[in-house]
Image 1 (cartoon, rainbow, N blue to C red):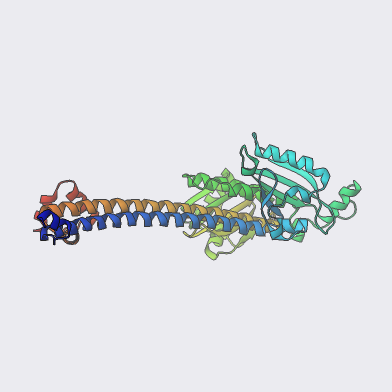
Image 2 (cartoon, rainbow, N blue to C red):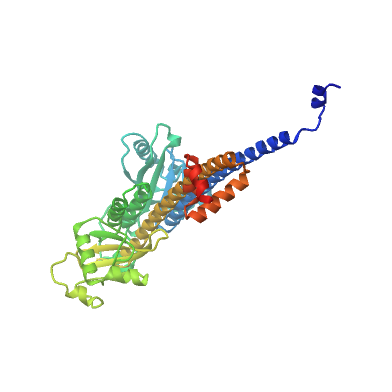
Length: 439
């Protein structure tokens, strides 16, 4: 058998050949480790995105569950994609059985054409808010009148891809009777929402509309101040009796940010800061809701009461919230008249503040995700530079990959230089200086 034939048949390789193959395997192992790191980083990012998306759905579902009127999401054909318990109760159908059904089947037949026209307006340009007076046709119940409001969430050329938010506010029984009779209400006035603690349908619709708009706020907005101001405006539109609103993130003494919708809110925030007391300060310190019918005469804050100069604010509703895991925040609702915030107003204020909490949590999660992605990118870049430095040392001083890395770690500790910075110096050509420093 010839020498060539003996090689093919598996003649033992020389030591140098074995070492070369082992070195090649070691390099492939290092490359696989880098690829593995990159895949792991991508998997973590995907996991974070899914968790963030689930968190958005949770807070939105929670708010939809507690809002005391029907909320629904349909496609451009009117098919129900999401519903809340209040809507299921209004139409007399089990919560789970509503999904996939057309919303129009629970309306009186004569209301169907107007509903379809509203759908077309909401799913095609120009998309505008729609308001309908309809008659509910619940399963196994009596017909009743209701206000139906539509808001465009996603428009598009295909009805199946469009998304429309609906707010359903049934009229109360007394109003239904008056509407049926076609006559104005007579006799002694019934207790208003302030005395009874029940919110009027129009007020609750305002809350729901604000909730829909708040859930659509661009949480990627880089200007947090602007986002806070927009939320303050939405809270003001939601809470009956509110004239001005501000949102304070962090301690009132040294707030991280303050967003307001008016000069009046800014002025009263400043007055509280000057005397370091007031409804906002108390809500932040105690974590409890604070309400006052007339802040100019309230004895709980004597220094604020004694502060000279005119102020437009009389009634205050201060609601503590979480700013997304970074600490406490306060939603300050101001009114220019006395005793503006009764039980119903306060309840709506609490729900609006809960929506603010959801948005702030969403923003905090997005910022955390961006920070994570940045850190992962830095880590991957550092890993690539360290691998380059290891290769340079392996070539220059004749050591294996483990020994090269160990020397980098030792030099990093001895010279008090971060490992990635030291590796960058080696990779950029300062290897002789580094080797000499390691002596």
